[in-house]
Length: 409
Ligand SMILES: *Cc1c(COP(=O)(O)O)cnc(C)c1O
Image 1 (tube, rainbow, N blue to C red):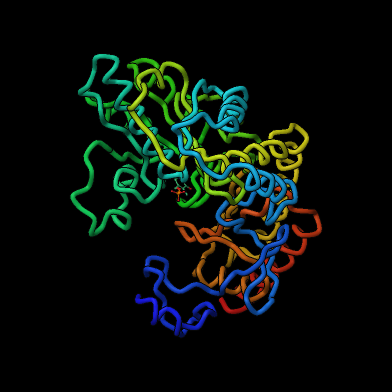
Image 2: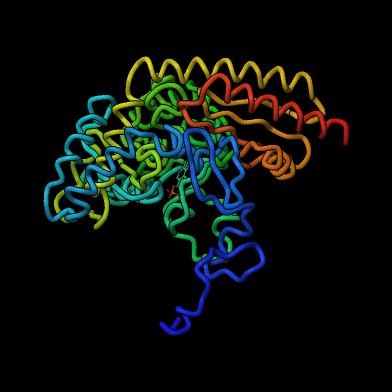
């Protein structure tokens, strides 16, 4: 757009009926979000919503948590960006903390979840290459999982709705049904490099993967020298009541992708790996201009200050268990509307018998924001700091909407 034309344009944001220049990848949005405070999001008309989207499991500490605002402001007065030409002290701190509290020995910082997965996929290929098995390049993945929107990560998930029109689909991925260990065994070849799975599926409809299945995958990987890789982009960072979701299963991966909750709203991701898996990632093998920039790691360290505390995590687990019980009661009361309740910690889902999109819309009108997922599931992803009163307010809205849907059924 020319400068002159730009000056003539009104400065108010476009409403639903003015043309938008934001690329049409997201479809119409329900409202413009202009402010956030704790568990509440405010639209441009000043209306307040109880936010059980948390920016899709990102704002774990709610909106504008004072400790995060403070960390961001302090860092913005000191140094914004220097690239990875120079050491960023906050990266050392953050990587050290993530490794101290996990299976990992090394961390690569990214700006998003998909980039963390890209790093994981590169690690898998490089690991096998370094092990003298360069033909081992293929990653076994699971139907219904989601790993991002880059060319490699849509190929990893393999779903038609993700890859349609973006062919040729990148080679090197093979999807098998979730939970089917025989299908995994049948998919193994001398080209297999790694197995990648979400321990709790987010977009796929809030499915907690059976720990025995993860254990069986671990065993296969150990037997034939494959990397086990967990995508904890959505379920990690306290969301399920432990710092990492896999902690509750007793099964550790070799590589793990993180993002969403890590920056509490500041874009930052990470790919964690144990020493063996990361050994091949030598100088020059990978990089990112913005990855782990001083602003990002300052905020992420402040996020961990709050979330990575036993009492905080126990509180998430307790609130989640109690809320799950309330949701189970909701299902019993409105069986024609709610088909299933699932999840762990504060990563919870309701499977709706009718249109889950209509259910999300009705809850929004009633002041509660939810996230749709696959299989007619609506996700409840409140901030981890949610109070008992806010949970009870949300439950009241869910009951009123379920009652209306039940009456209409
Ligand atoms: C959101 C998500 C991604 C992709 O993260 P982006 O930051 O959107 O690239 C990958 N895996 C899982 C499990 C996710 O939920």
